Length: 369
Image 1: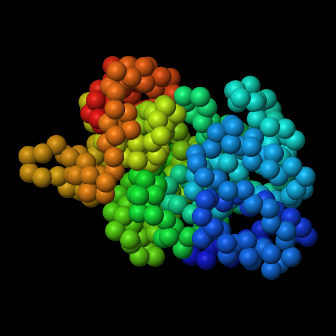
Image 2 (image 1 turned 90 degrees about the vertical axis):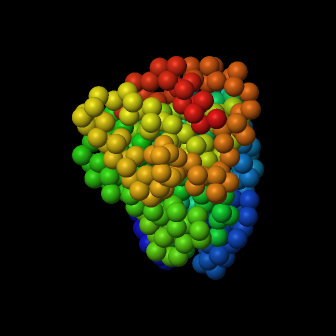
């Protein structure tokens, strides 16, 4: 991992020696990736490009694979947000296997997922949110749901995390990414499988992440973007080692059903999930104290009015920054029972600090509506 302002300048030094051709996976805009492409071409490297214009799916990955048949790339460079990084992870896996993904990624041979990758993958995030540059999974959309292609072979080889690349993101993207990073930090901290290692990473970043989120939403300076980038990177390490929780469990189900940005969903679900978790945790337990600490921090950074619910300040802030409510994505509450049932069994939900039932998830959805 290379972290800090100017980290992207290390790109050519981390590529294989005598590299002749690379695959550059980028977002819809070339604004951030163009200097990287030009730098590679100046070093005599042939660049093949794939543009990612939406959240990845099995179909989009397979379509991209068909576009680069015969390219003979010895490295993959992913420059973009979480969708770009996840697409690149899945593409590198397909390139190594020499075949496309099956429609049911649950049938992918686990041994092939856990073996070592041979093609170098350099991850260059342009949003401070998912931490995908340091995780071993690629989230892919299927029919009506999202699932993860997961295994050691999905880890990027190198992560170049340069805060200078974050500031050009549209405000809505920056807010959504920051909410994802903050939610990941809090859920990895309160996860039932958290450890002293993940606690050491996440506990300081609960307050740092909340403060940085406020700053970058108001177009913060280089220091704010560096803090947000650090929280995002750290949350990726933490979730890879300690799991997440119910907000991500619900977001995975909702994101598979509706055209809803993941980070914005997490932001709307965070408060209701924390409140539900605290109401069900044993008072004085480690889980209760961690949840209480997170609520106290959010109340401090997003203060509520006198006599209002302590997490109402976060809701007010979300409204100020035009974060849609759940009803804007999912207008029909009649689907909530089915969504709640699916959320119980979502991978992230199984790491929630307290066991939640279908009725609990329904209450969270109603509160976020």
